[in-house]
Structure formats: C-alpha cells, structure tokens
Amino acid sequence: MEIKHNGSDKMADCVSKVELSVSCTDLLDKDVGSKSDPLCVLLQKTGGDSWTELGRTERLKNTSSPSFSQRLRLDYHFETVQNLKLGVYDIDNSTSDLGDDDYLGGVELTLGQIVSSKTLTRPLELKKGKPAGKGTITVTAEEIKDNRAIELELEAKNLDKKDTFGKSDPFLEIFKQGDDGKWQLVHRTEVVKNNLNPCWKKFCVPLQTFCSSDLERPLKVDCSDHDSDGSHDLIGSFTTKVSELQKAAQGSPVQFDCIHPEKQKKKKSYKNSGVVSVKNCKLATQYTFLDYVMGGCQINFTVGIDFTGSNGDPRSPNSLHYMVRQAAPGFALNFNPLTPPTAKIYIELDIRYHPVEGTAGSWEGHDFLGVEDEKDESALVIRNDGFVDPESQRTVARPDQVEREARRLGRSLVRTGDEDDDDDDDDYDDDLMDMEASDIILTPLLSRCRPLSRSVVAGTPRVQSFQV
Image 1 (cartoon, one colour):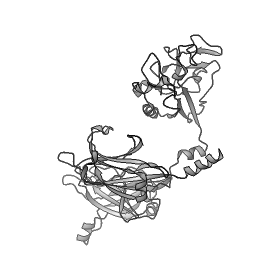
Image 2 (cartoon, rainbow, N blue to C red; image 1 turned 30 degrees about the vertical axis):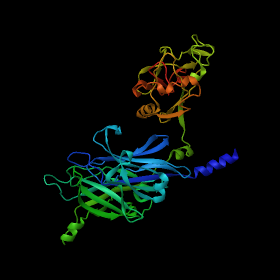
Image 3 (cartoon, rainbow, N blue to C red; image 1 turned 90 degrees about the vertical axis):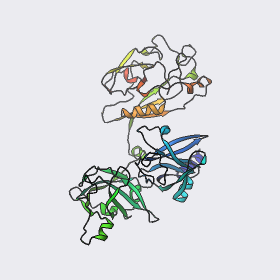
C-alpha cells in the first residue's frame, strides 16, 4: 500500500495544466460574397474511434486568417500519449451542433508534439487527407503555473472618425510579446457601435494568458474600427506592460496616446488619434477547488440511490428491492418505487408542491442537509446502479442533461458509481430512449420540512422508473 501511494504521488507530479492558442491562415471561403466565419474545436481521442470535445474558440466573422483569443485548456500527462484533433468550421447559424456547418479543415497530432515544439504549424486537411487549399493552423502551448488573473476597465476619448456616414465602431485587441518576439493575441474586447468615446466592459484574463505572469513583459494594444467585412481599420496603438497598467486606480486612470504610425510619419503636427484610459487595473486570485477544500469549505449533500436491476425483479419477494405493499416496522410509510405518487414535499425552487416517487422515509427522519444558514451550499448526489423497470422502457436523461438542468437551477451535481452493472440484466440499458431534461424535477430540501420529507430522495423524475 505504501509503495502504491508513493507511486501515485510521483505520477501526480507529471500532470500539468497547459493552454493552447490557435491561429490559422488562408482558410477556404465557403460563404458566397464574403469570407468564412471560422471557429476552432479541440477534440481528444478517448479510445477506438471515439473523440470527446474539450473546448472551442470564439467565432470570428469574415476572415480567412483568424487569430483566436479564446484559449483552450487541458491537462498534460507526461506519461500518456494524448491524441488530439483540431477542427476548423465555418459557422453560419446559432446552433452548437457542428454537423450542419462547413468543415474548413483540421489536423491530428499529439499534445506531446505541441508541448515539445511550443509553436507548431501544420497544413490543414479535409476528410480522407485531402489538402484544405493552402490553409494552415498554428498552435502554441504554454504551461499554466499562476492562478492569478488581471481585471481591467478601459475607455477611450476623441478617437478618429473612420466611417464615411457615421463615427467609428471601436474595439481593442491586446497582444503580448512571445519569447520569439512575435505578438500573440490575448484578448479582444466587444465592439462599441458608432462612438468616438467608448467605454468597454470590464474583463478578466488569467495572468498566465495575459503576460505569461511576467509583469514586465511588453504588451501592445491596437484600437481599430470594426467593419462587417473583416477589413478593420486601425485607429491607433500603443505599447505598455502590466506594471504600468497597475498604476491605474479608481478615480486616477492611466492614459496612453493612441498612435497611428502612418499619420505620425506624414504630419509633423500629429499628436494622436485618441487617448485610451485604464480606469482600473487589479490582480485577483482565481481559487481552485482544492483551495476551497483546504480552506475548510463545507458542502451539504442530498443523496439519491436508484434501484438496481442486478438485485432481481422488484416484484419478487427474493429481490433485495422487493416492493413492499404494506408499511414495514420502523417506517411511517413505505412508498413503492413504481407506484403512483403518494406523498408531497415542500421544495425551495418555485414554492410549489411536487410529487415524490420511489422513496421511503423513517418515522424519526434524518436531516441529511441540516440547512440552517441559507448561504450554505447544497448539492445533489446521485448513486448510479442501473435500475430498469421491467415493464417500462423509459429512462431519465443521461448525465450531461441532468448536469445542465442542475446547473440551470443553481445546484451542484455529483455522480458516483458505474454507468453499467456487471449483471446481464443491464445489457439492454444502453438501448433505452432518453428523456428531455425538462422531465426531471430537482428538489433541494429545506430544513423546515417535516421529518419524513427530510429523509426523502431529492431528485425525482416524472416517470415511474428511472436510471442515471
């Protein structure tokens, strides 16, 4: 046991957080009359021909040479070959499904290749290895060592007018200087329409991303006029570093002249093309889950255990989950798991009563939550053991749908157990049809509920049988 423990510690030291930045050149144009609207997706091979999406960048409009500001983060396991796929798509709709979008090309490689190269450029390929024109993709890897982030509030005054029939539509792009001397995009603000005195929304960027955690690393800020066709006009730019930005405070901004290099060369009297002000700059710590655990954070859990098919038919007296038709000794009520609702509990979400199915409560009751302070965090824990109603082929939504529903309701969700039981009775579980997440009722309990209800499972579907 001691040897295994030491080995796991050594293995843990071989895991690092890395961040990938992506840019492309000469993408295929799939849109009629304009350029493509590219987005990049990162996938990791999980076995066989299966790929799991790890993240995606933002979508950029009308550009064949995008530089994405959204970074892609993942764990780098030194001892493991991590096969990755980067795919670039032309996005022309608002759906998250990429099946109806044009594929502009992709590349398969390992994370080890990216990390060892730091910056890796590959030609894009279509399906079956066909070249995607002259398109290329460049990936840069950087290890994340700093959990700090920089918060900035920026505004500008008296910017140059760039539009013929209006003012300018300004936005900012912030670059850091890489070890190779090249500028890398780290953040792009929103566009402020028709305004020469814009005030951009406050934003927060990890310090590792923003300046590689080096407060003296050179930064470049470009202020440009946004054009819908992608041909943005430079208004002006300036260089700085985080140590200079930190001088800004509430009521005492730091100002920078926005300089257009061509205008500066032509006019001796040229002063600037506007002034960009840093209203506020603050370094903040982004705490990890481990930080909360080590800091003494306590979470209350509501635990639900579903009925497992491996224990036999619940209608049989020999089953460990036999449906008792009468109240058992020591129980006030014994709600049969597949019978119609016979009890109601008061829930926190929408201040209404909802039926609870498939649960049993003791007479004394036990307060699993113990929520006395409304600020306490609560979570729903589901123990999955693969129960299937022999008389019904309906099942609750799969974990990803349950997770989205729990998140929408502001609840944490923790799952334990295996998806499939070893018993042959569960072989047909995977063939069951999924239900919509809207068919799930998540019912966090309040401490003021009556004792019986406080022992009741706090996540129930509207159907008579369920698995998670």
